[in-house]
Length: 66
Image 1: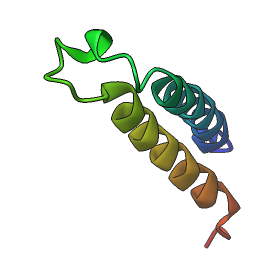
Image 2: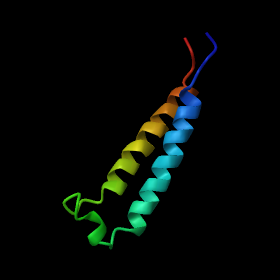
Image 3: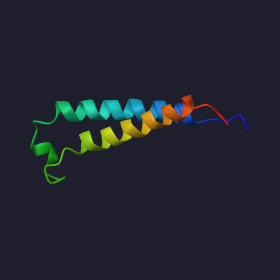
Image 4: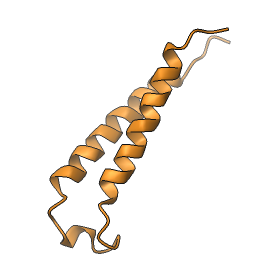
């Protein structure tokens, strides 16, 4: 099969993860925003995880096929 969805999934997760991480960095000083999450900046953590997953998917696209 010639269908390979690693590239679009990698791009989507990388872009959304980068945006969410940047948003978390800009709102890090707002303590009221993170009271419901026990003062954990969940935007940075989830954004970083999504960014790492997206980069891993993009790395798998570049790997040679067997």
